[in-house]
Amino acid sequence: MIKIYHNPRCAKSRQGLALLEASGKPFEVVKYLDSPLTSKELEAIIFKLGIKPLALIRKNEAIWKTDYKGKTLSDNALIDAMIAHAKLIERPIVTNKNKAAIGRPPELILEIL
Image (tube, rainbow, N blue to C red; front, side):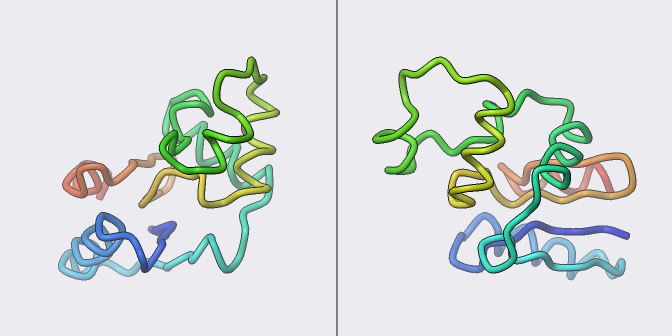
């Protein structure tokens, strides 16, 4: 099942959702700000993306700048930060079986459909 980890207030996330709707394929919308991810879920997404946790963090968020920027943090600490502050997670993320893509730009989503 295709899933989009979506923030309705984000333009790129809305564009990613529109691409999925246009594809005609069934998918599930996960509003991760309303239903926070678990560490296990976030680790699985990071694994599918094939990136380090730091690459999934929105570094322009105020909470990053005030609480985390400039600190040496382990991958687990970065995951904990994203769990504690879901706004730090880059968006949208789309998963499809064992693949995932960050929709920046949204067209990257098409590569895993």
